[in-house]
Length: 114
Image (cartoon, rainbow, N blue to C red; front, top):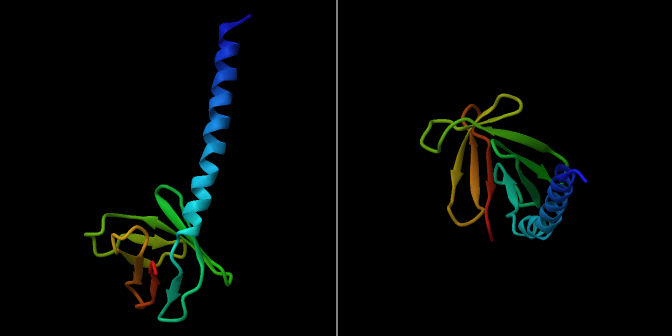
């Protein structure tokens, strides 16, 4: 039998185990995500999805937006939303809390761990 066939089978098995072993950690992360507030309104559940060079916020009441990283926190603006809005991302360094401030209109999203 071709030795490369065994390599393909082993690779597929490793990939399968890796994907399904990550499922518990993904669901645990979702439970620890802080609620968010838009412009000082009430805090509601928001699902945060990290996409590498971008992240998405899915609000439980319907709205959703994806933000793309443009630079470090030392830049005047470092995140752009899918509509072209420029935002400053402030990290509270507590394992999940952050603030997004729109530099053009002052809108603010606060996601604070409680």
